[in-house]
Length: 311
Image (cartoon, rainbow, N blue to C red):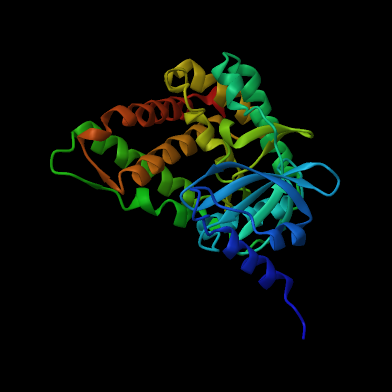
């Protein structure tokens, strides 16, 4: 009788996902460790859907093992499809995978976001650009599971308002929707994208700074750095400053060889989308503080579009 290795792996993960009755921590199944050729597991963290371990491979190198509690990668599958297709170019390598687990390259750190948090955002911005360019050098073509940008923007395009939503918020959301509709109707240079590339999804390893935690998106190349304007965590005050936005936009648009107003428009549209996800597509007065950043991006995108020197 032929034994399906994938079935063995997923069965072993099912055992792994069960927590020890004497402990609140999950346990790695020995059959899984043997199958993957790993040992010395060390639990790093748990998320609502998975446990993440540092393990040692046969060549004594570290690897990261992510085990899913419900034997399901859920919406993370397209991102891993993208990372696998990258084959280590600009991103962490995928060593093995199933519907229940991912074994991938260990990135020791630090996060790229730590550079910005240490007051070195110009250096961090350059490294971020270099990572995006490296990702786009990979000969990645057809990946059926990738999420098309038009579908990804549905939460923003379906936006509604509470009865007491201020006029300023309504206007900003509608403008973000209009920007998204215009950009999506005229996408340029469509390709597979990381989809969530920002400072805290890039980490240092033995091969330098590499991307991880991809969403796996299919869309315009300019979109790749749209989320980076809002990041990293802990630097919100700096990121909101027009001079920071302008400096980043100048560097990234030149490096990607795209129009600066278009990059800013994608950033504004995505920032609106992020808030739509947060508020489940219903905007009210409680979104006022977060909408300031969207409004700033909209104004800068509009002013750049009117400036012939930015084209």
